Each structure stands twice: as structure tokens, then as C-alpha cells.
Image (cartoon, rainbow, N blue to C red; front, side, top):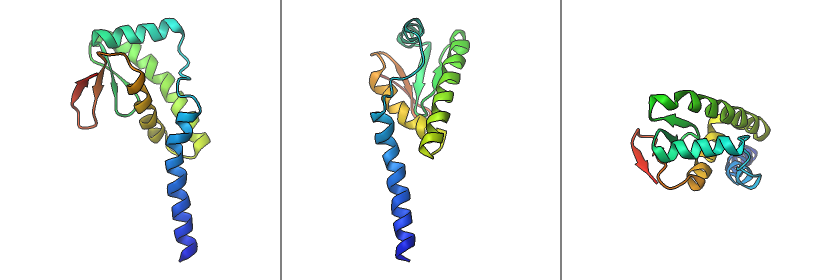
Length: 121
């Protein structure tokens, strides 16, 4: 019984380490060129693009849908790679990244909460 509890504790500890590990290994590693990052910030500032609780961008205007698809494809690749190296799900990684994105996004950025509500930074 004690061995089982130790394994569970280690598993919980390992999962909670994900947050710290991802944050400390440089979350600002998104493979975007400066121009791409500028475009993202411009679209966020205009309200055409928002960020979500799961670490993915959302098109708030139809004209931004293609751009958001490209951004999310790159993010998905990062999340999957990080998840494999950490032994967790890509969804967990995305949620950790979402917190970092929220912290670094410019004022005026819209954020989608898990309950479907939008709020502005």
C-alpha cells in the first residue's frame, strides 16, 4: 500500500513539475519571425484575434481565420513536442503556455475563458 501511495505522489509531483519546467525552459520559443509576431500583435490589438485558455489563438473576425490557423499549427507542433519530452498531454502543455501568452500579450488583447466568455486585457 505504501509503495502505491509513493507512486501516486511521484506522478502528481511529476505533473506539477511540468508547469515549472516549461516556464523555466523558455516559453518565448515560439518559432515566429519578428514580422509574424508583429502581425499577431497587430491582429490582437485590432480585436481580430484573441487568445484562449487552451494556448491556442482564436479568430474573432473571419478575415483572420487563415492567419490563426497558421499560428495554431505552429503552436500545436511545439505543444506536442514538449508533451512528448515531459510525458504529459499536449493539452496540459497548451494550458501552461496559455498562462505565459496571457502574461506577455499586449494590452487590449481579448481572452477566451473556458466558460466561453471573452474579456479584454
